[in-house]
Length: 370
Picture 1 (cartoon, helix red, strand yellow):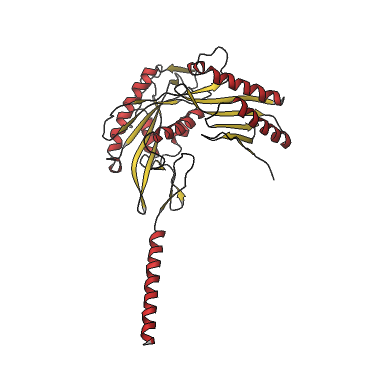
Picture 2 (cartoon, one colour):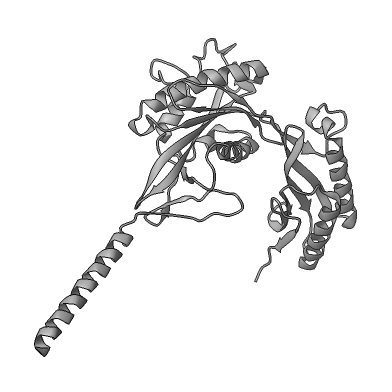
């Protein structure tokens, strides 16, 4: 009898072990995880232990002579996506449906060898047609479904030039064609319709919502990037309607004699930053410059990136200067928006002072050597 019960117990234990092992095996077969998120940002997709990079990674970097355009294009595109795909409900994934060759072909001119080019044929070399479409980026938005991720939406950013630079002769002088604001909008809408139709031809993108956002590039010599001016959410293969955006980026302090409607209508922001700059430059005699990139949504200031360039060599000077900047920032800079202040020399970052969105607490970090 005892032997019989022993067999029952052993069989039960083996059965439970099998169930546990099977359960563990099922859990470990999950190929996807997420990076986690915070402060209103998206979680990112991790596939088999690796961050899933874009299939067209690096294309936009090679297309831009102004690095500010690239940075504001990427960060601005995410802000547009948040209007449609909530950070609480969707998970961000780098674009997986447009590869490098596709994006490069689309950004090229339309020729017999490249019928997919979104830009017109060159025409006369002495008076070429402008290249309007400068950059394209894809963002995918996912939701978890069992052990996998399901694509639930896509955002496409299209960057349109505000000017076109060209040469009539190889190694000759550079010429510039200015592209009017109306033409920027028109060319953006034309490109958007073509891109949407092409995306719908991909089986995976046949039925998901596709958001297309249009971006006006800043000139190559601008100290700030451009801005998004419109977006459209589409469930079919034709653009449904456009929603206007009123993002603008400005350099502070405003140079004397410049005509910038954003800073003119927000003169208080410019004056406050000028006072902050004066305090910082008076603290130490060897501060080379204090500038800011300010972003506006309409007339409302939504964020600032400030750069302070120094010639400090003493670690104790950097420590004292960083603490002083935190106090000056609290006194002179606007409240209620995210601000970061980079303190750097010509060769390295020395420290950073920052305040997160929705916080009133300034934080500092000093880069030290061991």
